Each structure stands twice: as C-alpha cells, then as structure tokens.
Amino acid sequence: MSAGRHRMRSSFHGAAAAAAVGVLIVTAGGWVGYRQLAGQDCSGKIELSVAVATELAPAVDEAATEWEAKGAAVDGTCIDVTVAASDAVEVAAVVAAKHGASLAGVGQASGTAVSPDVWIPDSSTWLLRLQTGGAAAFEPGNGASIASSPVVVAMPEPIATRLGWPQKELGWTQLLARVNSDRPLKTGIVEPTRDAAGLSGLLSLMTAAAASGGATAEQDRIGALRALASGASALRQDLLAKFPTASDNTTLASALGAAALSEEDVIQYNAKKPPVPLAALYLKPAPLPLDYPYAVLPGIEPTKAAAARVLFEVLTTPSFKDKLATQALRGPDGNWGNGFNAPQGAPSPASGDASAPPPAKGGIAAGGLAPDAVERAVSSWSIATLSGRMLAIIDVSGSMKKPVPTANGATRQQVTAEAARRGLNLFDDSWSIGLWVFSTNLVGSRDYREVVPIGPLSRQRGALLRGLDTISSTSGDTGLYDTLLAAYKDVQQNWEPGKVNSIVLFTDGKNEDANGISQKDLLAELKRLRDPDQPVQVIIIGIGNEVSKSELDTIATGAGGNAFIAEDPTGIGDIFLRAIALRKAPA
Image (cartoon, rainbow, N blue to C red; front, side, top):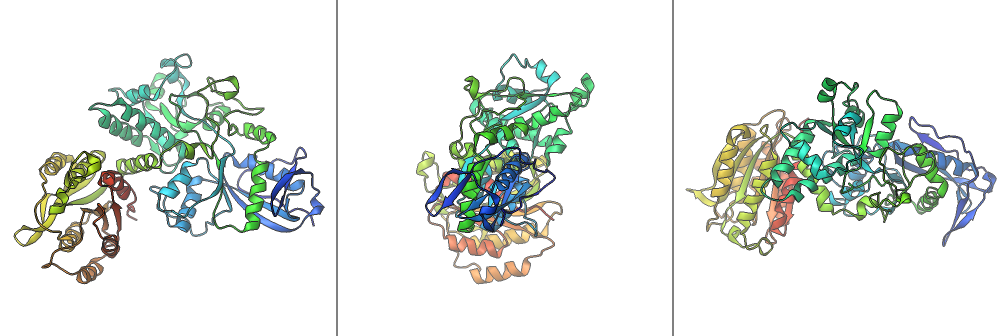
C-alpha cells in the first residue's frame, strides 16, 4: 500500500515535490539515520494533524508533501500528514480549554475546534502563557525552533528617513520618547494578548520604560500603554491597512507611523509594491523574535508521537531553510536560505552581525524570558484597554499589621494598598471604582466601611488615592462573610450595562465573625441573588499562608468568581493585575 495522501486545510497549496528527500525510519529504539523509501514499502496509515502558523504553513506543507511522496513511514506504517494553517490564538483557545488554562484576551474556543497532534505557533510565548495560565500539566514535547523572524518596528520609509534611517541606529528608549512626546509618533499594535509580535514589541517598550528609572518610569510606562492602545487592531491586516497610501505630508501625519511587526510582515507588505514602502527598524536591544517552536502536544498516541519525531527531522534539514526563505522566514539560527529578500539593514549571523537573532535553545522565546514578565505585560495591557466598574475591598483586621520580610518590613496592609495604588494608575477615566475596608465592628456592629463610593475615575481618582493613603489596620477580626454579601448587593443594585461589574476583595484571614452570617447561609444568599442578566464577578485575593484556600475557593465559586492566593504578599500586585485581566467581558 502506498504512503497516505498529504492534505492541507488552508487557502495555501503546497508546491509539488521538486526533489528526492531522505526519510528517517523509526524503530523501537528511536530513529536510525536516513534511508530512501519507496511508497509501496509501507502499509496502514498513521494520521498526524499539524497546526502551523499561517505564514509558515506553505513551507511545512511542501516539505511534508515531498516526504510523503517518497514514502513517509514509521515501522512500516504509512504516515498521512494534515497541515492546517492556523492562527495561534485559535489553537491556544482550544489547548487552554483542554488543559484548564485561562489566557487573558484569548476568548473561548469554538465548538468545532479540535486540538492538533503537533502545534507550530509563531512564538514560544504561547506555550509559556499556557503554562503560567493554569495548565500546570501542559508539557509539550520537543519545543525546538524550526524557523525564526525578528520582531521589528515597521515604519513608513519617509518617516523613518526623518529619524535618520538607515544610517542612524535607533533604540527602544528613543522610540519611547517619541511615543510620549508632545507631538507623539502615531503608533499601533496588534492586540498583544492575541499576537506574538505585538507582545514582543510591548515587552520591549515596557522594558525601556522601566529602565528609564526615576519618578517618570511609571508615567512613561502607562503613557506608552495608552498610546499603543489608541492605535490597536484586533487583526494584523487591519493594522497594515492603517499605514499611509500616499507620501504627502498630510497623509503621513494622519496615517500609522510605527508598529511592532515581524520582519516577515514587512517583507510581504513591500512585495506588494505599496505606494509607501515600510522600513524595518531593528531596534536595540533586540526584542524577542518569533521562533516557531515545534510542540508535540501531550496525550497523543505513541505511534503519532513517533511520526511527529520523524517529521521534525524533515523540517530541520538544510533544504528546509530554502523553503523558509520563499516565505520570507529565516532558519532557527537567524540565517536565511536562498531566495530570501532581506530588508535594508537586516542583521545576519552569517555576516558576523552580533545583533542578529540568537540561535534557538529549546525555543528562543521560552529560553530567554521570565514567565512573570509576560504575565505582567499581558495583564497591564488588558487593564489599560478595558473598561469596568469595580468595588475594591481591603482587609484591615489586626493580622494585616504583620510585617512582610520580603517588602523591607512594610506591613501586609501597606503592601496591599500599594498594589491597589499601582493598579489604579493603569485604569483610565472610563472606569468606575469604589473602595471599602473591613474587619469586625468597624461602624457599630457593621464589619465594613465605605471609604469612597463607586463612581467615575474621571472625577474621583484623587479621592481614591487619598483613601488608600489613609487606610490603617485595626485590632479587629475578619468579618469576611457579612462584608462580601453586602458588597455583592451594593454592586448588583447599581449594576451598569456594557461594563464588567466586579468585586475585588483582599484578605489575609478566614471569617472570624461569631455574630455574622454562616458560610452556609452566605452561599444560599449568593445563589438567590445571582442574576445571569446582571452578573457580578467576584475576585478574592488571599494574602499570606494563614488564609484558608478551600474557604476562599468555596465562597468565590459560590459568588461566581475565582480566588487567588499570594503566599508572598509582595506578589499581590501581579496577582491583582492577572485577576482583573481574566475577567469575562459582558456578552
């Protein structure tokens, strides 16, 4: 029986096989070298589904077609590869749903989507986000890079020329200054929660803001977020359509002036001979490149895993680099094959350029990036670009006076207030926010006190900041249940359509109010109050190691929300950002 027929589910069609290729034979002990096979030498069929980043799919499809034509097999069984050109965000949604992860900005998987056997997204950051997003058991096999494309700042050539391109070398610090100037450069980005090149650019800009130091670092970071958000696009083709279509000054001033894209995006855009070509600016320090990791997803059958190992070898042969070049992509080492049309100023390791993308080490992005940096950038972006209505509630019971060793002796209450203050800076004036504190018997027999009622930030940002400054811990206990119930009723009573109506409660203890409502009665009341037409999302953040995770999980779930634990209180800020970013937008 001949080898299985290769199939590709996309608008791309693989080219016919042009040359004979070697094929690996897999045995029980692994694969053993190259051997030419005839199609008649195998029988049966191993069906291997491969989801590939759209721009890389034609090269993978062509290589798989040639391979099958020459007899792709494992232990005498034919291999039938189906290549699907897929947006990474769509596959990420499927994999996240399968493994119980939550990714900010990704959304829900479609009902018809199926998890592939092998996934080759454009960046290892997708694998990293799945692991930090709750898919603890998500451990894909391999993960090595099979292609690469540097992330650049794409800029219309007339604008780039004014900035000194190509003679002058620019850095992210200079770009940040342009973005935050009195006459800012009009910048754009593809939603970084859904686009790896956008995320890479965002990370570089945020790093430049942090490196600026001093009192303006936070202001620079938020200013850059706001500027990028104003020019954000959900789809790459929509962002590209914002670049100027004429070189006159009026058009240049009103059109998009800069955006983080891949080198491949710029090459393909200019190949269409636009009226205003794009310059690819390779800013220093070099941002994370797209590294196209070869991820064998967990849980596939052993025979498929064996077939996937052989396909990986096919995609790492010297001839594959030439296939990548025709798609404007580089090899994983940063070098390019025959037919690559390099933009002006493109760095190349082959020419000794030290600024070129580094060689892959288990996936470039995964190997050189701290997971919390990605989470922080994604969460900050989500908050800066969403609108909501939120009641923040801070525990001021006696235990919140406890010093935090990792925070230079600041108390839990001070660390929590500072996290809330930093989060508040990210919210724009479209938000409505209020502030309560709670303990026991704060106002007579009542366990909570309203510091600032929920209202538009446009008129009460200062009041909220002053309120956070005046918070001080008491000697009381933790009136958790009564406070949560009262807050739920308050937010629901004045529920605002078109916004995520939510409660964020910080506590370091368990309910200790002997005169308050019981957990059983609290859950019953929350069940009675819940209204699917007016949902209230509850987030509870437990501080320290004295909290009862099971208690917080129980009441958060009963309120239709989630509980998070910050065993080290200095991590409250990151957890707060992530929790807000994961809220579900109103239907």
